[in-house]
Length: 400
Image (tube, rainbow, N blue to C red; front, side, top):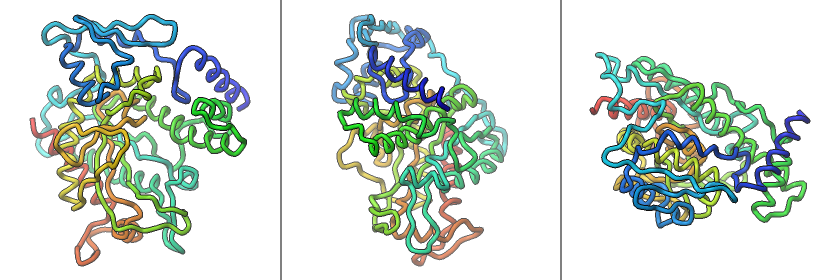
């Protein structure tokens, strides 16, 4: 444990000196972009930057567009990386995942045959949920724990998707973390993170920041390694539940709002692109053409989920997001999971956990058949979620 703690602290000290990195991020290996040389036209490259990944010219301080190539800022003191544009259609980008057009047509009754799907149940369950502040309880009611709820949805989806012919994998199958790191081992990295943000590294602040790095950085980075190096799926579905501010977790505020939205990678800001790792990760997503799969899949899935749940679209008020088309349910946003999974990713945010209507359904748990809620017969919230996700996948992969 002490060796791991010392190693993490040493890495943080060494990398900050010669690169601007997000907490726990490795220094990018820019030669990994060599595989994407001459695979994208200048027009498509700039269009994706402006429309999806770095709108409002956020990319202009770190990427210079020239006639036949782009000069990309790497790390301080290092030469820019030169990306050559394709003339004409260009070569197909090398990726481990298969786009819909390259997948075989499903056999009768097996519309998802040949498709490899990774399910990422968001957050952590059990006692870990309290650390994440994704837990609340009203009186003696059943605690509302997002990490346990997303895992329940995932475990309902696995047999359903397998029956439809898909290969299905989970990034986690238990309430606890998949990362081997623990907050106490991240204190050095937490102090550096606070310093980078210009905040005082008090003992209390370091403890809180080390917990945040544990569940928001180390855990997600470990899941990304599982996805990219072991599962290597055609698509990742990040399963989440949404929430409005509930205040004190033991005396939470219930609201009337309830809504649904989906997120795909996009909308990196100028500040985010000043980090070497985020700039590199964005370019990998842009160059591997994830967006071309993410958008139509998300469109299909948003349609089936909106019909099944009856939920209206969520509208961001401020924040770094971008509209990627005219679908009111779909937004581009820079999230670590979306960015690090180097394949198409759909990030699903249905239901407000502390809305009155959703809270009642959560308290009802999972059940067969239907129960009455406000005069409407509904299947369990978990089955409604899982079924509408499966229906969206079938809709997309059978529309060729």
